[in-house]
Picture (tube, rainbow, N blue to C red):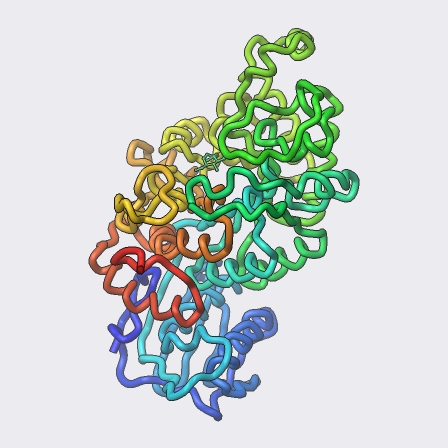
Length: 511
Ligand code: TNX
């Protein structure tokens, strides 16, 4: 019976029972008040595909949601008998993840948006207990290189929920675009959100169509994304890149740059030499941006970027050299450290935690900073040993913009191959860490850079099914067995089919 509905991610403990629970016209749902939101979500998920009314009942409901504070906040117990189902979580998030497990026990058609023919809405009897290995189970989405319309971001959030991922790191700004409205600096989006395509298609093969590319999220778009994610127990962590990867901001406000020269939103990919100047006025500008960002995003963490910042312009600029002398700094690395520290202190003073790529370890950092470790695991090791929390996203394991096979016909052949099996082998904790150091590893995240993913369809192709493997690496205990994962995936792909995901088929790209 269980092989009919194998779960992804792999459950910690599951004991099959006898018989099944059949959902029908008489099925009711119930929960206590703190779980109203989860209950509404469950009704809104089950009603469209089943066509069942699923009314709320105050006592003796068929499906009951409950809390038990002895469990961890994201942990849950699921008990299904022919008479009913109970999902008990340590907190509302645990109940919600239990609901996701329940959905996976139903036929894949439960992921459709309207009723289709001939489904028995049966759930196999069982007892299950599950708890996530990591608190940060993330996906980083680069909406700067190619803008992702809000509707598609909401869809990605639903797909994250299905895989019990709980953190969406939005890379909102880069050389090629600024994607969030900032009221006090309207040119950031009036100018910085639009570019003329020139290098598009260099790898993906898509022809540039000559139209400007762009878009951005208004403040209400962001509020909607944050609230929609919140209803699914997903935290949205924003990132504003500094002091490199800023050409879109320089196009809007050239005086933020070292040279002050007019710029266009960048139309190439790669590492850009144009970086921010280290003036007090630039710190003020970005603390102002971060103030508006903090108004919109309630997340504990706020990203300040920090990766790939070539220091040539600082080295060659007499004013910057003078500034360094005033600040008593001798290297450009220290100057980057000074800049990141100023923004980090501003965030910390507001009760938030700075979050940046592992390059920021080259400078002095406020306590409570969290590091996204991307250059292999060296950043994770250094950060954990220095007492900083870490989110592991090593490029050789979870960079889902990288090509999915060695095949010469593999579409979007970026960088080194990262096969499903490679990704499945991801462990966020580098083996050289002691148990005490490893406690700094909050978890991990897949990264979806979009230089060569110019549409949501291409993002689907690159994310799936590799994101399913990442999700399991972040939720389930270590030591998963790839052939077992592949077997479960065969079934899981039917869920993705019903959902409408254009994944890469594990046997290879289809003709
Ligand atoms: C490096 S990873 C970058 C990104 C690129 C990515 C492409 C990181 C922090 N910086 O700007 O999009 O490589 O794979």
